[in-house]
Image 1 (cartoon, rainbow, N blue to C red):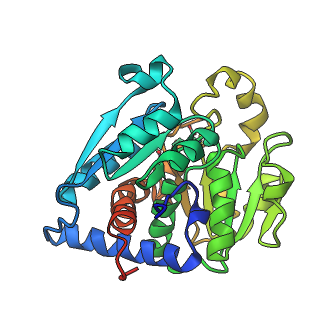
Image 2: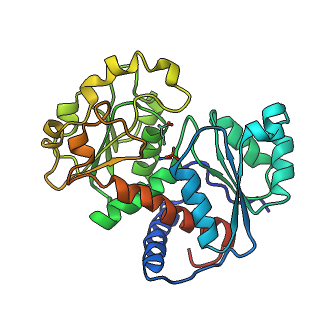
Length: 303
Ligand code: CP
Ligand code: NVA
């Protein structure tokens, strides 16, 4: 039987996504209550990181240990992947020894190819195209601070990157309105905007008006560093300031997947201010991914 993978949010149904969010909230409460919950005893997660990471590595590794299992960090530098062993051969070998594989890589195609040859679930820990694990945490955070995001208005501000495309997937699955606020040349392609829930509004003062959630991200994603010189010029009007936040709904939340650059994509007053929930958002990577690991590895009826 083909294993379930989590390469984009669309690998889940809306119902499964709702169940994952609820389970993440429950697992967080269980941990706060000091309950030991080790359903993954003896299970191993291999983590392949082709790009740097703080949150993704720590949350998956801590999450596996808390669930009673083990996580193994693999870098292409120290494995045969870095010396040209094919993805197909690597997938066959690694997946014969572990119970799941998390991969952070560049092109999304490497993930789909790995998944095709893997006999265990493969999780996207970030690709150039998508960052679905971050969306699990973001959605859990909105639920915790407010409620169901259905029908709410979310505004994505800045670069139309992997996070932006993941928000498009989330809007479709969880049925919220998404305003994509990117400068010309930075918005995702037209196929990402072809949905009545998605609207391209390039002018920040228009896009933020009345929004319930304001989200931004770095101006240069991992692997795009060489383009950094041009980005600040184009993206400067998209910096989230107190003045812009005042246009949003008074109850609006601010999110950023981190790492952040204060004074670039967001002013310190905003990210360190009262509407910002970035620390819960980061912590929720742990709880949300524990829910995901249970879902993929236990594959039981509870979901
Ligand atoms: N948000 C996020 O994925 O952070 P890391 O790059 O530190 O893993
Ligand atoms: N868009 C960013 C997210 C980092 C977590 C990147 O890909 O680098």
